[in-house]
Image (cartoon, rainbow, N blue to C red; front, side, top):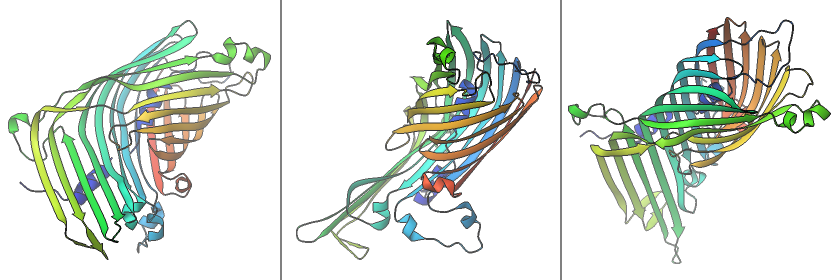
Length: 413
């Protein structure tokens, strides 16, 4: 059986980015705020029936700027990479969604193709520093999904609910561990290993034609709750500047995991009790390669997110300016450390619900994203264009170490 090189597997892990935010925004924040009764003479009315699509793609790292990659001569500064290397890529595509919305309830249907992936190489591994069980990783996942989008009201609470069925196309989880220590006799001991597991809907080689497409879909749901807190506690009546709603979104709550049956497993280990000037003595590689069909399969889940947010309109009697801070956490099983923080802040300027500008910064799926979006809404149709600077590093997210673009179109009446 033909073996796949390690570098090719790492490249495959980078084909996918973080774009779950598209699904979150379209499915939960798409519906208009029914608690806002502001009227403008030339305000574009909201669509009752709507259909559309969205597309977004991006790439980011903490080492090279985008303009440096396209130079005729590429110059690498290894002083920067000695601090560790991180890279994220991904794509999010909503080929269609449909919504029917009134002031009190709404229902719709949407489909989604999403990939996300990351490469992390620690500074200890790059510099061969003393370390114990230091972790690096290369991970990726690609899912297709379809769900029913709905909202309704229970007294003053607005409830959003989205049951969904999903199926993974590919799922890669890689762990690289590294240890270096010095014994009392000044002997340097080093141990390194990598463990790569790839699960796919299609076999990478023709293992069994009867099981060419194998696996089983999974099920999850998302739940959102919004409440006009400032109005209900009387704060807005006393101080009109404090006009805000609060909410909680729980995204991809698992019900039943999907299953993939085709898998590839590559494991390798290197150990030495005498490491001198980059040469290994007294040790060697242990190597194992498996590609097969597993009837029991592998249970897989989409990333779970819990986001608490505030929607604040600080100008009394106007929807011209909206501020949206948010904070929460995510659990993504493809990462060595699956739990990480999610936070963000958006500022929205809406000119009569016709020209809409959104600018913000967020930390999403371990990537800092500075985004700017423009929308033109004439009720019969709406066009959305977006661009972003992004990077796993906060400081590098401002210097074009990564770029993202998005496009969306809606139509209806």
